Length: 162
Image 1: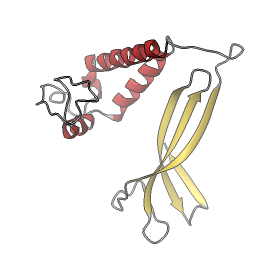
Image 2 (image 1 turned 60 degrees about the horizontal axis):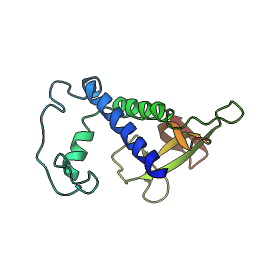
Image 3 (image 1 turned 180 degrees about the vertical axis):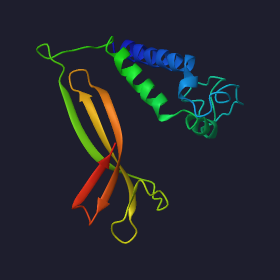
């Protein structure tokens, strides 16, 4: 049963990616040129793509994902979550039970990134704040936001920018 569910889950993600691909120009930094030609194949991450000849290299994958605007990732996430409800839409006494939690996440140190750099301690650090909305009965994330943290006077005043 788990294999059937995972197979359906992968198929659902593939459908969402195909749907995004059909309208990708809405979410590209350069719609006229981004994602318009096929790239060379590399052997670096063939295992992940089940040895498909169309699998990209790590570098190519990273370069390609930066061509997609954040709104494209948002579209893909919400499309996937909505389609997953057809696989499992459990309710508790006719209600959807949701939990929300937020966490600060340290990211790679880069003092030049003024949006995420926190001036605390000797060296300071970079961090973002993540808020997640989780459907507890279906065990899926419904929504997610990444926010910038601005901190003054230690941790006494914290402002989140969405």
